Amino acid sequence: MALPRHFDLNLLPIFITLMRERHVTRAAQKLHLSQPAISHALRRLREALDDPLFVRTDQGMQPTPRAEALLPAVVQALGLLEEGLAPPPAFAAATSARHFTLATTDYFEELLYPPFLSRLLQQAPGLSFSIELITPQVLSEGLQSRQVDMVVGLDRRVELPAGVLSTPWFEEEWVCLAARDNATVGDSLSLAAFAGAAHVELADISGLGPGPIDECLGAHGLGRRVISRNLNYIAAARVVALTDAIMTLPRRMAERFTALLPVRQVEAPLALGALTLTLIQHELYARDPATVWLFDELTAFAQAFDTRGVR
Image 1 (cartoon, rainbow, N blue to C red):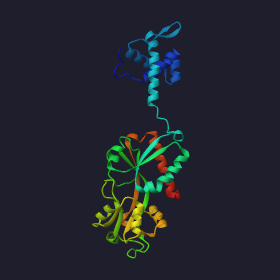
Image 2: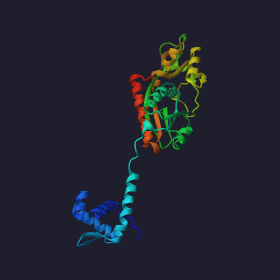
Image 3: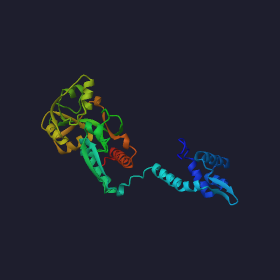
Image 4: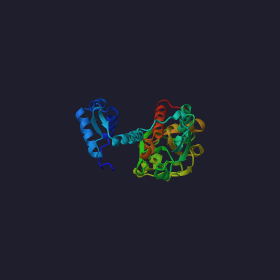
């Protein structure tokens, strides 16, 4: 006979305790329930299973053959439920050989990724990582299919597909880079002077549309003339060093180039605001222990880098 459609699974632990104790009062004490509550539960079990289950004899409450037959199945079923409903174990990074794939910006890969990886491998030497470009396909499909575990360093203003979660992660100032002997640019730029300068920028290979700089200029009815689009920061900075063009980039990246090339920092227009980088993941895997661990490690790293300048 099938169970009733609305069978109360809470009755099953009571049934197991009654089978073990063979006594209503002792079962109530074990379960920290009242004796009437146990008696009521037993009545409901009898009605649901169409069997007396327990019969009073001179030797006390004795289970019926149906009750004896049910016990192993009920114990096994509850064990499976407890196992299935238990929270997943924490991610054991120290012994894991997990491979993570990150889609990132040049800024993260060049400046933050090397010290981040070095720090992780000290505590989790078996881990490995792959770096990919951020593309619309990564955001719409890669995260959902878990081909990419997390997108690191994308600007917060990018529009995201449904189910994709974005968390502010790291903030950087925009600054400009100019050649040391560039007499057309002073120590700072107004928005009008910024728009009127020649620019070098990174090529947009992501297909995600206008970046925050062009959005800002557009909001003020301005545009800019780009004389060179380069695939990486170092090539773009070298162009700046040999021309009268400027380049806009995060301050910590600019600091690298002022030490390597004949270039100097120029304060960017205040209207450009700050660059807020994000951590992006798919809601499907946001509670997965490995994803939670990676998110926490990236967050802790960003805080340490921001306060102490991790090298």
